[in-house]
View (cartoon, rainbow, N blue to C red):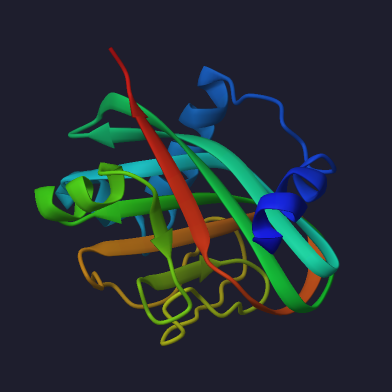
Amino acid sequence: MLTRFLLPLLLAFLPAAPALADDYSDALKTFRNASQSGHYLDKAYGYALFPTIGKGGVGLGAAHGSGRVYVKGKHVGDTTMNQVSVGLQLGGQAFSQIIFFEDERAFREFTGGNFEFGAEASAVAITAAAGAQAGTGGATAGVSGGKNDAAGVSKYYKGMAIFTIAKGGLMYQAAVGGQKFSYKAVK
């Protein structure tokens, strides 16, 4: 109930500009060149790519981003990610995110409706940034020196693997909350 009222208010402060085709190409190139995420592109059934997700908060936080879903390199749908979090947090951050689908089952689960990564280990988050960040899976975190050095585990968890690459900003956070995704197939 709280989410329904706070999400629109919090998202009003985040950037909402739609990503351009070049933004997707640049983000994909960055993930392809990263040491840990690059090999997933050739082997995964598909992936969801978010060139920029904006995240901010002071005690109460929100994140929002628009992306595209691909199967075997073909754009098959559009997705949005929203997140509301409550807890110790301060600051703002922009990052890119890619979610790899190991097989058709994982792809169908993600695109089948309103999908959510919960705090109870719904996925393994593999982070590529200057600092470590706990993931939605809670089991794995990684650290790297830059955007071309994603670090973490190199296996799927429940058919999905997530990589994020920080683009800018600084955020201190110890929050509770999950990413929620909507999906719309392209015609």
